[in-house]
Image (cartoon, rainbow, N blue to C red; front, side, top):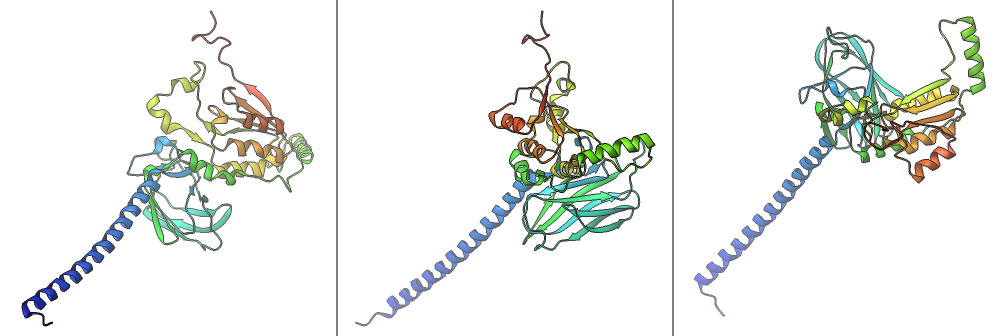
Length: 346
């Protein structure tokens, strides 16, 4: 059957329209996928920035909002919850010349000479050698100094931290650098708190060396301290009238909360625990509120010292009590009053 020319022409136009619509639909689909992917990446980036960057060596008093964050300690660092970290870039403003040394865990990676003014220091990592999440990256200044009229600050202003991990880049803004982060982030760093006591300095030898050096009034001692006090938490669930925690304004309390980070704990544990006779786990608050407290308490079984814990006694659970008993802890329980009534007993 012969198809009229007009009908054939109309069918051709309809066929072309279908093809055009199909091509347009495919293009819109691909565009939608790309837009969704970009939107997801922006959301993920916002989430990572909102999750902050678990750091140490800073103080909440030095956070200048979105502009900069002054650091006040010679050693500072971050725990980056990222995999396959390839590159670290620190952007900052230094008023004087000094050096900046970069570490991954305890391994020294490189040193940069700093000059006065705004600048950046970039460090390249080898992914095959450094390929795990919750990686510690640390920095050490070659010199220490204080700003005129401000004894807290070294005068260096931290402006940004840029990280290349795998094929993506993550930028942390100044307000991300604080002691605070969510509990899940701290727990992801739990393995970084584990310490082995194997190959430790003999406690008896350190005791003998302490006595010898004190008797001889040695100027530079080789012995390590026999008694240690670790302030592992600045947070309390009580507001006892006899404690300063009761008088911290609520608007400042959240920002002031901080815990001992894993790198500092490991440094103390690996260098000082082997020769210690007594280690007192304490803090400006309730020690059992540290997110990694179970792993921290578990390290006592690796060494010979007598462990002790200062607590208000309200946070005991079957799990942490078992750790305390198995670790041979002595307990010091702080009691504000024997009576429940406010103001003490009548």
